[in-house]
Length: 442
Image 1 (spheres, rainbow, N blue to C red):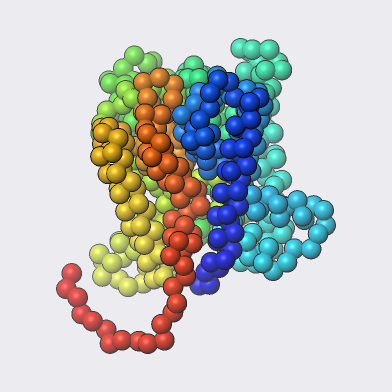
Image 2: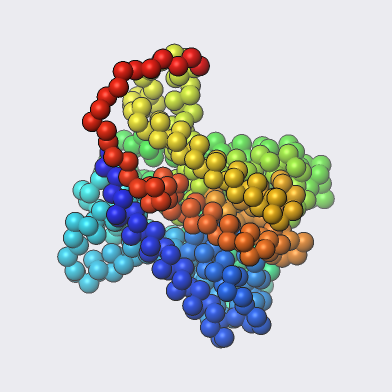
């Protein structure tokens, strides 16, 4: 497999440039209310570009309508990827796309090859527009019952963009806790999140499958769909079994189910919440860190390790324990390189997060479990938080150094562990020397 290190660096630099531009706009006097420190502007811009949703400033209160527009645009561009957006604009202007631009686009979208890349990008943009517009209309009609039409339309637009891009930013200070029992919000927001978290490759393939352009879904798409469903159901089960008579005790039975469904969907990809996460048991907070670390599918708006990496690691582990050297699923073989890469991603990601958590816990002198929860939320670009005791994320309690640590985790989770590590250490040079095999006892 060819690793395009230079193209990966350009993608990283594009994210950094977009974040810096966002900081510049948010620091404008007409973009925020009251004082806005540089580190808080950087945190907010990174959280928006990396579609995370962790906040150290109250979005509806501390930012002006101009600031809200800036945050929404950062979410939209960050969710797609700056280089991808620029390439699409070039295509629309009928400019020729060179080989290097195609390589960057391939890396940014996690597309398996160069063939049909431009057509794939056009379908991606069409899908984004259609899905977000439908979400905007539904949410606007719902919010219209609680506020004037003009304000409801803006809230509908902002939350649809935030949900599809798995960002979790909200224009309500209490996020969506006021809509905990609302069936429309509890269906629309999670569906938008799921569609954004599946990845553009899966959405495009489902579109072609529905039109009968293809007769069989790929192994990638099947793994993503099955794993997504399993993780959502498993998350709901854990929440309901552990919190039925605890955090959910005061709710009606149907509210408990909706709250568990909403939280389970948001565990892996987005930071919306309809319940106070600080009321959850330690057991639930601990288990939720695994969901946040997994994240969504590659090539979409979600971060984390990615469900495909976890799936391949589980497949490899299963066949290794059986003593079978040929792993396969859905009647398709899985290469040893892919399984080893999945192991490497999980190991490296775990080291990054654990090391960051230990540093944060020791330097900030805050409870370890809640610090771990925040670190996993940042790395998974989830945005869920146990809170600072008010409406802000737990990160608001951190020092400037602690916030910087979270910023790095958000960027790492959005770009991807493999790409992030390759950019830092460089591409390994393949050795032409083959040594005799060593025997190691396991």
